[in-house]
Every structure is written in structure tokens, then in C-alpha cells.
Image (cartoon, rainbow, N blue to C red):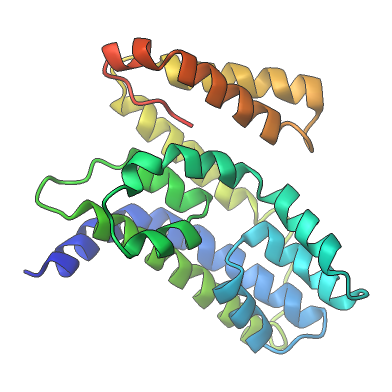
Length: 235
């Protein structure tokens, strides 16, 4: 079995829960684009090039409004600023991956980060190719869902309110899997406490960036303690 094939087979099971969520959410995005007056190839192309779910939904209004590239840039930066912290967390893991690093950086979404950061990659599987296929499979799911939704949007109409909870449920499962893998739960408990405090202080719309910054600082300061306990910091 080739290196790439082995990595693909190892990566695929980790992406199955994400596939379920991405197909549903991608389809809802495609339907939303269709209802807004765009042909199916719009969600197909944007999901390939942008590949940032929240920004893609916002892009619909940007495309319908006046041309304002600065506003679009600042809005995208604000929505996806959390990826700065993801990138810092993945510096060591991406080291030595060669040219694959460029796609790993481009294709890193919340879900791919969660899998690649926490997955126990078998010793006989190439780490770089494993992470590459996790990113690629997740993007394929999203593009497929968006394209299908764009095509079916004009044929089938249904109420999609609440469908975004699929991703919340998926993150809960990922958190529980990480909890079960840890020898102690210092980092996970800190993450919950910090997020709760920031939620109270900054509100539901503004707490993500402050909470991630606080997690990064506190977990960095406690890294030696966590390493002694053989605990991987959970971002």
C-alpha cells in the first residue's frame, strides 16, 4: 500500500462526522445562494476559493451590496481572526511537511484543526499526508454540499432554521473524545472556565477572540506543567 493511500485510509474515518455536518451546512449555503439569485456555480466556486463557512454566508450580502473591498477584507479578518491562534498552535505539527504545508495552511478550517491537532496518527502513517487528506476531504465535503444545495435550491424548498446546530453537536463530540484521551483534564477545564468568563464579560458576539487569546497566554505559561503531566494543551 502506498504512502498516500495509507494516509487517506487513516484520515477518512476521522472526517466522517465532519462530512455529515458539512454536507448539511454546505447544502444550506447553496440553497441560500440560490434563493438570493445566484446560479449553482457561485456557491461551488466560492466554497473552493474562500472555504470559510461563516465568511461565505456573509459574502452573499457583500455580493449583493456595493463594491467595497476594504469592508470585505476587514469583515473577513474579524470573523476568522481565530485562525491566527490555530496557526500558532500548528507550527510544530506543520514543520517538515514540505510543499504540503501551503495547502495545510490554506485549507485549515475549525474542523480540520480539531482533527489534526488531537488525532492519534499511527506510527506507520505519514503525518504530513494524513493532515493533508483531512483538509482535502473536509473541503470536498463542503464544496459538494454547497454545489448540491445550489442545484437543488430552485427545486426543493424547506425550512433550514437550526441546521447549524449540527456543527455545535460535532464540536461537543470532538471535545468529549479529547477529554477521554487526556490523563488529566487541566487544559480542558481551563478552556471551559476561560470561555465562560469571556462569554460573561464580552457577550456571545465578542467572546471568541478574547477567550482564545487568554487560552493561548495561560496554556503557554503552563506548558511546562502540562508537559510534565504528559497532557496536550487543548486549544
